[in-house]
Image 1: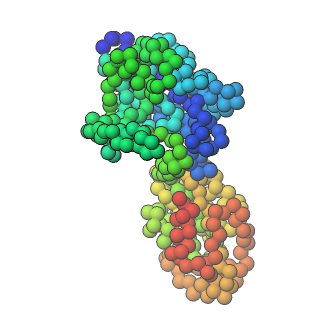
Image 2: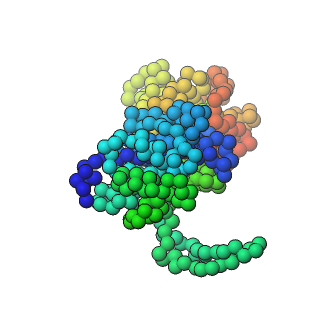
Image 3: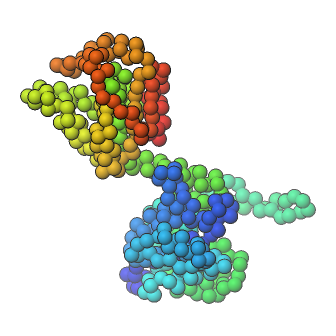
Length: 410
């Protein structure tokens, strides 16, 4: 192993010039958004997010579609001091060669990656680069083949099995593929114009080079068909859901069933219940005048919810939240901590039922005085125009309401 390889940095060529015809998205494949509408990002950005974490990385070249429009769209999406964009060529080999030429000349370890394998974990990049540094001229990540594979020959209108290879010696190759720079440049120079090579490691093999194999990863799926895109979208949405704290904010007049629903949701979501009635009564017991409790109770509830959300704990906030100003504070909190916000307005369309609930309530907090029906009717109330859900508790039971909220959280 040469000292230059051990000490040199890593360059990555991300091939993103494909048209995506089989995907049927009407745009270059690498620019197809993945995930739900609110969180969707193009494939190429998912690929870059993982590639940029590679140990020893110094520069990434993204190879864009060769037409001016496709190139400009890629430039608009891809930014960063260690990332540049070049136009691709007529064939994949031309695109890789163009990306290789754009890397800084002093980089000795080069990884070639397909943007279509956008979810390849950073650990795979590190394994491949480490194997090249260890002295291998060419390295590919791969998974064992688990299906039985048949070699076939065409015979009229059907295909006939010619052989059944032993799958114990077969591997499904992925990207990124890693190379000594000189090895990759030599392979491209000798194989120029040959269309039979589907990957860069194949070019190295054709020139007599040896290719080492390291473990790949199931997440290195190549997004080629709409079905592949659906799988990738589920990954993205699942990752985002796991990474983002959840904030469910209930709003509704006293007696509509907020606390009952909040408790059901906390059981389902393993969430923290932030109940403003509890906070306000604690402030009263601590000696705060009743006239000052309202606004300060909301401020304390917000602070407790912020701490829980920052710790990535799901939160269910249980408050009357009657006016836009109070609701805006919760929306601002969600934005500040990067939480998924689900706003739920609860109403009871049956006045007789609502009244019976209010008049039948028994305080479950020591010292708490529940409001009268007249006080509830006199309270200002503004419909929550931006709420994700509006649930009528006169017609929707607690468990059904909890299911609706749980679905909105997903």
